[in-house]
Image (tube, rainbow, N blue to C red; front, side):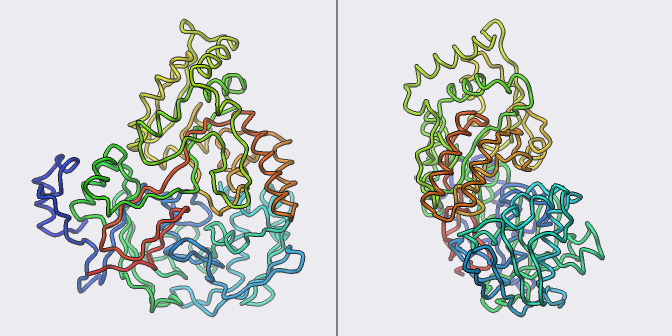
Length: 541
């Protein structure tokens, strides 16, 4: 990566001391790395957490991938600076009186190669992600669309999907049930258009730099795996006149401590995640850079119920009982996060709350005693411990919490073997079922309780532990058909409680946003979806 001589010298001289001192030891902030030069214009360097596995909207599933794709492609609606839905490829839309049919009217705009964006690009993209041959882990997201489930499971042909293009600028979407948050629902990357003319001509190679075309604010210029990905301003974007930053570099930064060094040396203008071990130092010395607000995110450990003895609910309950969430959140991580005893975060729209693990208010000593009793009843003891493989990442929070977690479970006769890999590989292992216990997290795709609970539907690509409960899913289906939002929320609460009583997950903590932003980056709005599109940002020179 290119950087100035002064920054190179600063890094060489400061080294590991950057963890506890200023970048050059004098307590000052480094000068902007988001800079203007003759060849690249205004440059913005983003620390993005992990290496993307793809830029194909049908194949991605991580927030670090969605951040990039959202700079390249615009769906029917898109996000404003605060991650609220606004018109995107569609300039207007209207529902039918029963809420089951939505008609979207596309604006006149083109792909970056000059080919017009048409309603057929959406029809093609949605059929493609639901095609069983694509094997998209996120295909279930489209299940509210008429016949989407049957199409995805091969029961009906692709042409049965409830989406049609009566003309080039009109898209008609027919739903299985009313979706009251439709404008937000269609912001998601699974519902992006793709350039049919290019995908059919290039196949999997359509996402390569030099081939990729965009209808969004940026173009893909370069992708050097595990180093950086560079985007440049798209002059054919319909709102190009209001895009201020010319070049965006995305850097995979799974190691928060190393990223903090780069951030303080001026190599990164934003960084997510924050290294938790440095949070007290950051609050004392760099508070103006911190962007920490409650987020619609749950961190949890998935339990693979297809692996014995995790099919035994007693063991799953015992593991939940033994985890001291308050110690992890308040004394170890210290990122202002709340311990989680439910799947749906507090404050989620259309959710009355109230569902919780039954032991939530039980003193921890009693919880531990009950957990030991359940494990003993299942045949385990200090002399005969249960050995489990824990698939997790190498990030800073993991390194910080893994030993305390092992110790907590050791008290209930569980020997936890840790298998650490980088984020992308870890999620691949989870999707393949190659784990007993697997660390995961879920950031809301849209602000509604159903988005969290649908993760646990049978066969869903993000249902890592293969949990399946027909009664739970019947309640989800009942809620989906209920148009009264109050009644719908109550049904979802009952479904959540039923799932919690099965203990298919070890719920850990509700997240806060974990971003550091240099003060000269303007327009960054902390929000509960952790989405900050580059098109809304500016650099104060």
